[in-house]
Length: 257
Length: 246
Image (cartoon, each protein chain N blue to C red):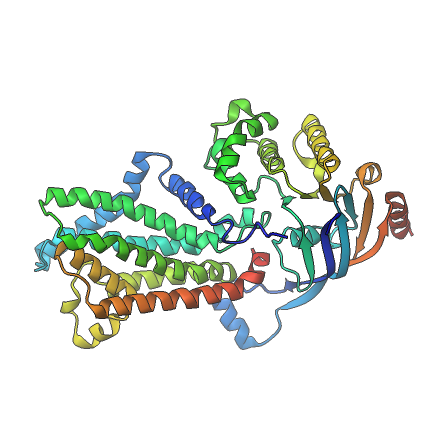
């Protein structure tokens, strides 16, 4: 007897759900994309004005540095928030049709990755505007994004189910994201931080991802072995632990919907 | 497993009845500190065993809260049994709460695709069947309208039409004759019967004794989570009515 309803048999559903989600987010229109992108763009404007005129940031290509940082951070923040809601928001379907539940958080992270891709296209036009031809090291950027996608998936697994068990998970996560935004070098460079703090935050995969992506895209530097090791190590640790929690909670959680 | 499509053996299921529901991290922490049990367990199903043959239509009857819908949810794998096993041979399609899976912001067409995908169609299959589904649901003029502008009957019809296209081997139905208007109900019921003729199995939960009497091959009477009696419709209905008319 063959089981047709396993994760591997149904994995193409991940893509379709992500596309459908994307359509909904953009409300089937180009203007929809514009609206979702307006928020980071306005934040970019504020941060840009503050840091070039008031704090006089010394970072080379600061506007591009900032925009890339915001796009990468957005993927993380949005992706985990989609992931957090991925099961709860489909409670209607899930209490009537059986779908391997792993599919939903992964698909949510994929939606985040798709939005990142669109936003990177906009970043591309900014490169043109600033007349910067990215160095050859930019080719590793997709790999860094895939790593970020894995990280978001790893966090979305436990978050999606915890959010059903404890409905305030989303608020707690919102606060953590807020803190993460400041602890991750989105609008500053890690080297301005005191040594003690820097030694701790290097273990954040997001800090590593952020630095590696910028070095490769703007400054022609390949990631150091240390960065690669730390980012891969922490990301996969999060994925494994996250999935273990997901498996543990998955059995009975749907009854709580 | 030649003529049996579904085998349920010694299945038990408990639910937690929450007295104070701890739905937040805050409540979980404060509740833990208070150290009182905040729920009691109710045995919804107690050691239930039965099997379903191919081409057979089985009815499940019983009072509200007897565990009928829980059985269907266990059979469709939405719930996991606490103990016991459920073995199924073939695709199972549940007709429970039809249309609840639709996304109100998407058009009927998009919803067919995504609902079909969730039910187990491949993208290609569902796109091929799209027109047929719209026709069956009698929604030809509405295919590009968003579901939020549909009446609940229209949405249920669309869900039904999509689900029957899967060509399932085992169909689970909760109160069949509740989809759409009279003509559509007749049509949907005939569809179920045509499945039966094609050697598909149907498990139906209903309070409609006419259906039980006319079309079910066997009937299970469930009370307080236990199977009281299984057998010929007439016999079981008699037992059922006697029990509650005393």
